[in-house]
Image (cartoon, rainbow, N blue to C red; front, side, top):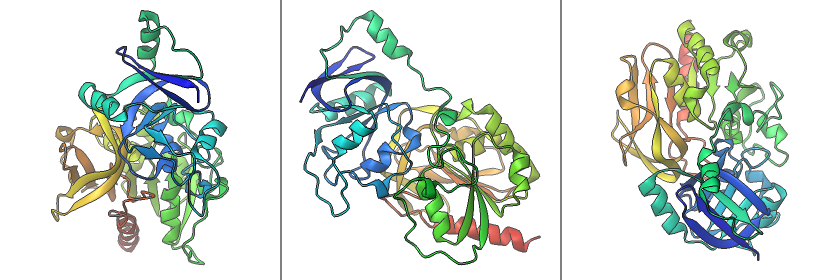
Length: 382
């Protein structure tokens, strides 16, 4: 295997071995603590622009399984693992993870001390980095470090449009990801018509709605409030997605129009949660190193119960910015940040974590049922 190098914006250099495609890539270096679900991570549009570090020491042990993709391609800028398994074992395995990285043009590095890297990112905060593989280590001088530091994730939502559905309005993400099929039995007459506003939607959001008998229409990020109302949906799902939520001024303005009308039940996840909050007058902020992984504890403020959740975000809604109409429904046990909001003046709620998590945890999957109940109650009140 050829050598590879990870160069951080502060000048730190890690030397390892090349995996995936050869070349170089600059991105925002982050870490995720998931022990499984690496394919979902690699194909989650929310990781757009990022170099992802897996803290679990062995990755790739079940290989490449297209049925597990969350979108049609990988969106990460680079990939970092301690050890890459080159002999996967799984009855669904369709190839190695290294083959996947090569086919998607993802530059990666293995064989470095991912624990030391993670500690640095926890102490210093998210930091830009560069992976250079299959070549000699670039000269680490002021010019290179400035180039790395200048990298910025911009127009993220627009950049991942068509991640799941090829950019075609009203076409299922599941239909566009060749091997993704909904295994659960669907009702012959869908009970609810849902508009899924695609900001970089994971395919499993639609799967969870369809499992419950919903008919889902996917619309792109540039859709207007008027166009959504014209579809006459029973409910609106605001999807996950990448980047700084406050950057999406136009989308937030359209969400506000829908909220001001006050008649359409809304469920927001991750980026959708953040933009809904911004539309209601809240503020967001960038976290020091974000929340990424499948082991984040969140507490229900009503019941006191703690749920283990899957998360992937670098921004959060500021606790102190919640208006009187917004009640915090969940908070992060580790750092106290807002993880869920319920709105008292409109039929809407949102969560920062992923209740559709695949491959888990599934503790908060019941929130999709809550959304269906909200739509039923809204219909009955008319």
